[in-house]
Amino acid sequence: MTFEYQKYPPPDIPLQRSSLEPILCEIWKARSFLYASDFETEPLETTEASDYQPFFRFDGNSIYAKNFIGFIQQDEHLLEIYPKVFKDKGVDKGLMLKHIFYWFRYCRKIRFPYAQSNLDSLPEKNIPELLIWLFASQCLEVISQNPFHQYQETAEALATPRGKIDFQAYARNGLARGLYHQIDCVYEPFVYDNQVNRTIKYVCRLLQSVARFGETQEVLRKIVFTLDDVDDLPCSASSLQSVRLNAFFSDYEPILDWCRRFLDQHLYSHRPYELSTWSLLLPMEYVFEDFVAGFIELELPEWKVHPQKSDLYLTDTPKAFQMRHDIFLEHRENTNNRIIVDTKYKMRPVDADDKKKGVSQADLYQVFSYAVRRKCPRVVLIYPNFQEEVRPPEHFEINVDWLEGGKITIMILEIPFWSGRNFGGLQEQLREGLREVLK
Image (tube, rainbow, N blue to C red):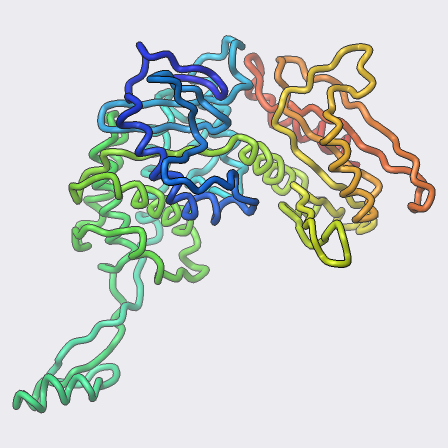
């Protein structure tokens, strides 16, 4: 186990550089599956060299973690990376995991397949085991309560016509061979043995090869048993590209999202029913941003949330320098009440004599340009707490004579992102704190 921006010394490395670095490069090459679809942002790096990866820096066999959290698991070896907000805080691993999955609950760009009841009963294990357990628990609940049937196109030679006749195939296979009674037809039966259920069954088979705990294995076995009438065939992430779910089966969407992710990692295994290497590495800046946006959307319904709003350019002629706000808020009743929110996952050191209040000059220039271009006089810079006690809000005022209201107010807000003593009270504390500032 290590933390962001921390060295992982050689004696404790379960994965040596010679085996780990090629895997990381392959993960980065395939990043379009995860980062392009889940994070509407510019590329994290512009370097496209075949030996490039942004997750770790190597010094000999020593590993320096960067800004990604998550895990890499290869066979029996596991490397977990935890957020830097917990570093040197004395927070035990179980409590860190509860925080991480509490944040994931509000994330919208990567949907995790679990309900609040799952979150409250998390066993204290490790990140990959928890992901499997949460996926399997939700999957079993969904397939048991809402079995998935689908119209599936089938081509078959029949004695009695069904659906529509494929005349070209009939001329080729029936008439040309003297098999006049075998009519090639295309029809769509409503079947349980379909691509969705086959994929779920195959993914659960894969996860059985890496799950280490008895209760997780038991849930996976129940899923495989429930899908006993479904063909047991190897699948790939591409097999789900043509799958379209109607509203009645919307609860399958997060499950299939994670099936795609599990299958995407399967490229490192040469055996069809073995998941030898898999990983989940997420840039913590975007987890923090996604958490804040999802929290406001769910807990403060009076606000309409626009994540990653990017409809304006800094220049008009030519249109260039596209602006991308982390979060743009509009009050549902008072549409003139608008707020630009910019999340900063960084430590904000504050000295009593520091007039800048720990805010970097570049960050203030950035949000000021946002406010001027959008003619929005309210901006909130949101930071996570790096100490147990959350510091009170502060603000800057910038006089702008030509702007309605005459000034731009930039609020500096530190939110209760974690707590070593009051994890159960974080949700209420954050909800009321945000509501008070935003109103």
